Length: 298
Length: 131
Image (cartoon, rainbow over all chains, first blue to last red; front, side):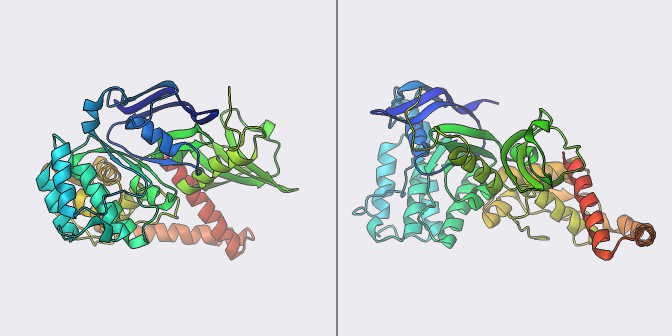
């Protein structure tokens, strides 16, 4: 399957600090990708590199087969909704649509118009007077009416109430169902990602910790509970992500593609949230000298 | 619409399997019969705010199992009725289970141990079947 976004050794440095480093990633077409990680992990930097707002300090990034920062033409094929879903507060909803039509060659004014109507937005309303949920929907409408092949969204639902959040994601998923657009969506809200995403990328401390299809990740991660166990005695094909021990009991969070045959373990299924938390805390806790605060590497 | 899907994100069961289970369950209980149309992908997506690929994957799996068929441009339709055949199998299975429970009691297991053993075996069998 072709990649809509491919990064090889991608890095971005701000003065002495690497906001993103050695990022190698291939995101297949037709997916809804969840990009997760703690604040400052490099999520926004990666998205800004993908739309050409930033240029790489190291490595390369290809989006839809082109380099975003050197080829402005193909930006028409990428939709981007920045953090806080910005709109022009003094302009009306109708002004935004006119602006979109002027700036984008492939603008679908019928799609834009019918979405605004479906959302019940008043075209004469100034964007500054809209609610947070309405503003996010307007920003999403602008991004999809240019009929992009790839839609990038930077924490679009972070500031929305639960109802507005659900409505936003419903709208987004309808677009995916109808137009087959690929989506990369950064968020802290793992419960939302669990519903909408079929591919997950975990960024921690400026590096990619885990990337893969959600179903594969759910099938290959397990929680093992059993009598206390020396980790050195585990089979080679079991990778320990996190381990906790009491005097008598061991609780292991492991990744393996092989079946777990050892009858001394009670095997529990894990959720996507368990996986995200396990990888995020692995990076925070178990590797001294490589914590999030120490961004200077190589 | 014949059935409405729901999603439990805390269950640890992947969303597409939840949809598959819900269709099978509805068929088993006789709520869904041959000829019924399943909700369209767009309906499910806009109601649950879930990934369309999840719905497609669930419907594909049901198709592979020979339970539904997709008519391009129209929708996905149920092609068999599960409940009659499987309801008939309930009786003998129940008797097998009763015999097994009696054996477990004879071996000295209390109710809690029996439940734990059944649940554990069921889960590991389900996992083996899924993987």
